Image (tube, rainbow, N blue to C red; front, side, top):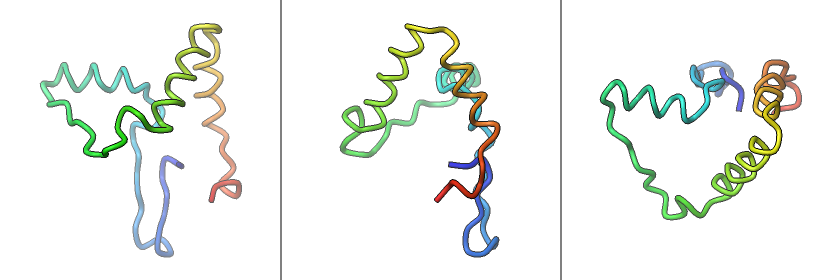
Length: 84
């Protein structure tokens, strides 16, 4: 998903200000600010494709410490025409 995405011919814009932030950093910040942890209401939480990809990324990060930086760097040059 793009950090800013327009819908309905530009009538609605979704802004994702934390899209370049690591999930663990966001979790620590929220915890430090006293924000409650919001559990996912989805019945597949913990057994979803998202969790499978997170586990794969953790293995990649463990094997090569440059993987995370390379992925985040690649997100900076997204061609909008390639997105659905």
